[in-house]
Image (cartoon, rainbow, N blue to C red; front, side):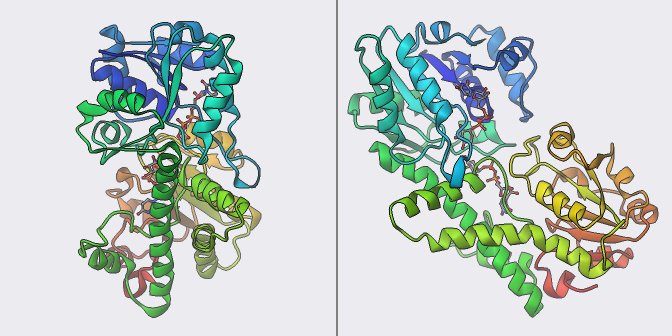
Length: 437
Ligand code: UDX
Ligand code: UDX
């Protein structure tokens, strides 16, 4: 059993805290938001993540997990301190590090014994050294500490199983003793542990996210070519994926990537390169293609309906991906804005993200079910591939629409069947299967 403090109870922090407690450690999770901590103490999760509520409750009851807003309390017995505060996008795509700075300053002022600071947030290359400098400058008297970078690769929606079954653990440190102690903490995860220097570890996180985003933009570009040439991108991706050098993951064409990581991390990596006088052309193309994918579904709709003025359009799924209520950089936001700009009346439905969505898209009318979304609508656009959309009563949907137009931005339906049902259906890159109706 180790004593751990986790700073920041967002997606990364809360999952980290709950999972380390579940592995038998004593964890204090700290956040500056009184409201979040108060709710957590009452057993209310600040975010939607499958399985998280149960895990938090189990570990709180077992006395291994507690919550606080006080650095003094959080750091009291801590040997390991995980920094998991948000690193949002700042000006020009540069990462905004003000929360990391605040956390580092507070740690420095409060610490009264040696500890290892572990950075889990995605931060620009060089931040580990910068954090060490801030801590040194703000300590009232020198106390030993070490900074280790341990980037987190979990995905929202499957965060707990991703955390507990990682493909690898990356540790960046200039201090071999600190690295081996952090490595020991991660041994129960039974994944290969790679120790490197701080900057390389920070770069591994950016390069990994940028590579996955590149795969998505690549397949989206292929999808657009498929549409023009009459091929089907789903089958193309499947055929490519059997090649072990390529694999099946992250080759789903659609409305493009969103979320709290890919958009900001690709931008931040490009920014870091530009500052150094480099020309990150591939990253630029990845971002351009991603922006186009969102417009593309609206262009398709215009192609079928003509003017969108006064047309009622339902957005099926609003979160940036299924199994989360996260609306950060969700494609639905851009799509709703484009439709509203063209004079359409926009409705939205999402199984869990509607409350968050209502805040960021106040002009969109939220409805309680996919069937309500369809009532009197001129078109439906599938924006998020929630499982519950896959088995809807499509005849009922068709019958209640004013015009049965279906733009499948995630390719979840069988084009032939939708056409047989009488929908004017368009998928993404479905060429011979779904390009024309
Ligand atoms: C994480 C990572 O930190 C980020 O680098 C990665 O790219 C995306 O995932 P996430 O967990 O999603 O961010 O952040 P968020 O949900 O915004 O939570 C951050 C938490 O830190 C919030 O609860 C906030 O109140 C808290 N916080 C912020 C602090 O406790 N102290 C601060 O000084 C600032
Ligand atoms: C991502 C990384 O996968 C994770 O390792 C990192 O720690 C945080 O960022 P996350 O943003 O939670 O995780 O979700 P992910 O499942 O990677 O999806 C990101 C976006 O890409 C979503 O909008 C998703 O819809 C989209 N996507 C994903 C596609 O459009 N096609 C695909 O084939 C895969």
